[in-house]
Amino acid sequence: MVGYRSAMAAGTVLCLLVVSSSVQVSMVAAAAGARPPAMFVFGDSTLDVGNNNYLPGPGVPRANQPFYGIDFPGAVATGRFSNGYNIADYLAKSIGFPCSPPPYLSLAPSTGRLVQAAVSGGVSYASGGAGIFDSTNAGNNIPLSKQLEYFRSTKSQMVAKLGSGAANLLLAKSVFLFSVGSNDLFVFAVAEQKQNKSAAELKRDVATLYASLLSGYSAAVQELHALGARKLAVINVGLLGCVPAARLNDAAGACSGALNQLASGFDDALASMLAGLAARLRRPGFVYSLADYYGLSAATFDDPRAVGYTDIAGACCGGGRLGAEAPCLPNATVCANRDQHAFWDAVHPSQRGAMLTAQNFYDSRPGRYTAPINFKQLALTSL
Ligand SMILES: *[C@@H]1O[C@H](CO)[C@@H](O)[C@H](O)[C@H]1NC(C)=O
Ligand SMILES: *[C@@H]1O[C@H](CO)[C@@H](O)[C@H](O)[C@H]1NC(C)=O
Image (spheres, rainbow, N blue to C red):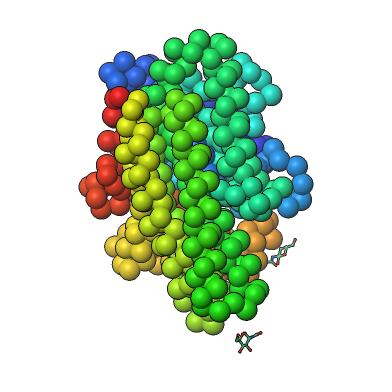
C-alpha cells in the first residue's frame, strides 16, 4: 500500500492534465468533425467515475480505497469500480477524449466548472448501485431519474452561458452513453428468491418487471431527446449469472442460468424498445447504437484463452470462495495477474475486461456486438 494516494481529487487532476496537453489535437479533431464535442454518461457502477464518493451514508457503494485503482495512474482509488480505468474511460478514449468525463457531483458546486466541463468533454452522472427504478438500492445512489434531473440542470446552465442555439448544437453532436438495468434485475432476483412462487407467478412478475423497466428507460430516452440529445450509445445488461457473486450460489461455481435468462429477456425488450423509439424520433433526428454486452461476455467466456484470460470465474480482489465471499477492501487479497482475470471484484470487470469490451463496442463489425451501427459510426455521425 506504499505510494497509495486516496485523495479523490487526484484522479480528476490526472485526466485534466492530459486534457491540457492534448488541447491542440482535440481542437483539430473537432474542426475536422472527427470527434463529438462531449459525452454525457448515465447509469451504474460499470460507468461511475466517482459520483458515489460525494454521496453521504454508510450504505453507499464506494470504490474510494485500496485496492480499487491499484493500476490507475498514480495508483489512486478514484471511485471507479475497477483496478484501473473502466468502460466509460475506454469508450471516451476511443472516441478521442483522454478519459471519461468527470463526475457531476465533483463539478456541481461551481456553475463555472460544470459548464466548462460540459462544453469541453461532457459530464458523467453514473452512480454505482443505480437502477432504472428509484426504489433500486434506494438512498444509496443517484437513480436514473435524478441523473436526468442533474442533466436538466446542466443544460439550463449551459443555455444561460452559451445561449440555447449553441447549447443545442453542442448536445446534438454529443454522445449520450447509457449502461443501466443490472441493479434492478439483481434486486428483483433476490426478492423473488425469498418468496416461494409458482412458475406461473414468476413468469407474470417477470413480464411486469420488464414492462415497468422498459417504460422507465424509454421515458428517460425520450426526455433526453426532448432536451436535445440525438446520438445514443446503449450498453445492454451483461451475463449477470456469471459474475463471481452469482456463481457463489452454485456448489460447483457454475453460472446462474436463471439470472442469465432474466438478463437476456430484458435485453430483448431493450432492443425492441430502442428500435421502436428510433422509428418515432426520426425527426428532428435520433440515431443509436445498442451494444451487446451479454453476447460479447458469452463469446469471451466460451473461449477465454483467446483473449488471454486464465480466470473468468473468480474475483481478483476479495476473499473466500471465488474471491467473492469478502469485499474488495484493504484487508482483501489481490491477484498478481490482473490482466488475466475477467473480474476485478465480485461483480465488476477488470480494467482489461473494460478495455476489451470498449474496443469491441467501438469498432467491431456492426451486427456482431453492436446494432445497427457501432459506437465509432455513432460518434462520427453528423445530423
Ligand atoms: C414451495 O411451494 C411448493 C408448492 O407450492 C411446496 O410444495 C413447497 O414445500 C414450498 N417450499 C417452501 C420452502 O416453502
Ligand atoms: C475485511 O473486513 C470486512 C469488514 O470490515 C469483512 O467483512 C471481510 O470479511 C474482511 N475480509 C477478509 C478477507 O477477511
